[in-house]
Image: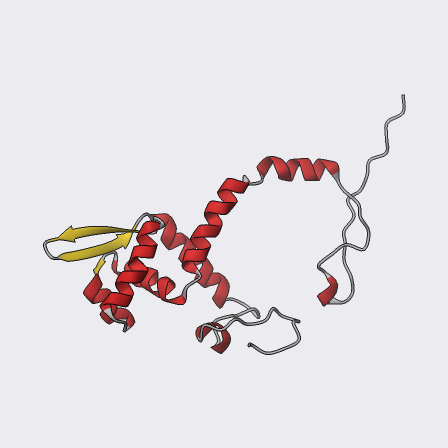
Length: 160
């Protein structure tokens, strides 16, 4: 009985950085695929994660979250003053954040105070901010700061 020869995984690459999206050769490493599949998140978890990122995809909600995290807890009036927005606009965004489990509300008399739902939110925002601010891919310049989308490196153009 002869053992089948071990297959080396193929590393796919091209000289041109823009063409790294696909392999020139279709080779599957079954052991590697099985190992990754065993640790891969379920579609349900991926969907829940996508919802969180969709909620945080709004620049205003990111700023509100950052302010709440920085303060620990803020009332609607203080939040509005902090981010220089109307209380009604802040309240609208806070409803979205609360409905998606990112903040919790506490009523004290006629005032409502908001705080992060848990410590994971701070970690998520801190890591994302660090990612945006580091290295040559720094997205914190004009394109990212003005709410417009910047093209990926090598995308052949300036921010739209």
